[in-house]
Image (cartoon, rainbow, N blue to C red):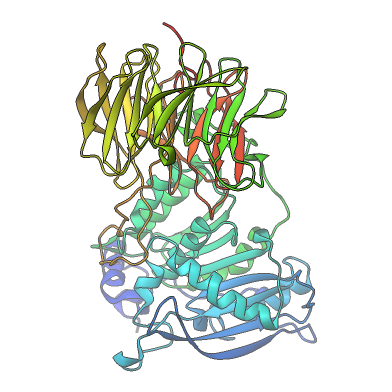
Length: 605
């Protein structure tokens, strides 16, 4: 006789409650696995080999050990072209009588050309051996910390430890388009997080009954996705109405919200949502072959962006970024680029501050680069008098350059400027990062006075289009502070106007049901504005954009994921070219920003 939980007439609420209480061991009526032909071994078909790899002792997760295994297809060639797919909770995907049967499914799909020859990597979560034996290989004591936590720690573990170990024996492709990652439940959010953080290594995600709830802040993803430039990843999700509902969240709703956010941002995303299945691998296992076919398909559909629900006043990333326009290299091989600015004609200027060719350069609208002077500058701006103003903390001075003769006038000495902005009245405000202050300089009278103090390593600085508001970014804090500019140059109405997104601290504590630990320092750096009043701030996580009211429009990815960005400006004849300096290179992209960029080229009212 069936139990209440197995009976088809059991109320759905009761089933959901039982699933929430008893977990994956409880199955609802519909939860009976029906293997497809792809789950069954083909007689005389080519078969790959699964090799247990023994115990892995992690250095990135000290004190943990784990089992892992590798599947190598029969069609494998050691020429570095093989694809690779990583599975979290790896043990459960290998059972030839289970719901996944990965080696069998891989054998069948690879043989028919429905996926490329793919190495499977099956990694169990870490476990602290001092805590005794885990109940099973996939219930390691470090599982929640590794899988549920946001940030790039687990991605680094795979990239720095596991992948190189596999590549030593079985070379595989370095192309991120030929790398996939999969997981279920907490493993599902882990798979997404790896690709989200490191799309330069993984671009295909399979997440089944993913735990995008508040186990460790994962419920933040829908909002983050909508406020972040679309990443080049493809995502297949699976969930069902009978999934968990408990104090950490409602799994079906969380997955629906994640998919809605992906769809809003134009991702290549698919969501198979079923009726009745619980928090288990049954439905996910059944659709697994189809998921692989979809993930590995050759089609690259054009993004579909639907903004009919946007409010008229919302300056979303959809109203700034242009589909198909990405970062393009303008200059490379530099020592250290900084000081991005523009003149009224739309020519771009920067300084190379290190190396063998230190100086200030102009890149004309036709692309011609000219060296103007051997002087270096951490900040550059054109003033209302047409001169190019510059600052350099190493020489403790602010100076003005008259072009084209390149004559220099020193305006202030004995100061420690990091960056500055000049208004239409000839007032300069500059950040002195070490002193934690903003300083005022009158170009005409040479008066220097403290404008404000007490900021957490003030760095970037800009003004609003009407020159009425001064904005200062904190490198060591989380705010962009705003001030009202008075006619005499004094500042008042100080407020933490914009809150910068900060990097997750991989060394912090990740308590359950709380947001992840963030670093104190946002790395806020160079700033600029456009005529719509948007503020652009370079930072540790990318180029952050805010609307005139201080709300975040979104974050634009760094052009070099492993290197920072230090300054930015809108240049070009139409001021629709967004430039950033990034260590040894300079990049630009075309955006939907119009009119004169006042923070880059001050003009008379």
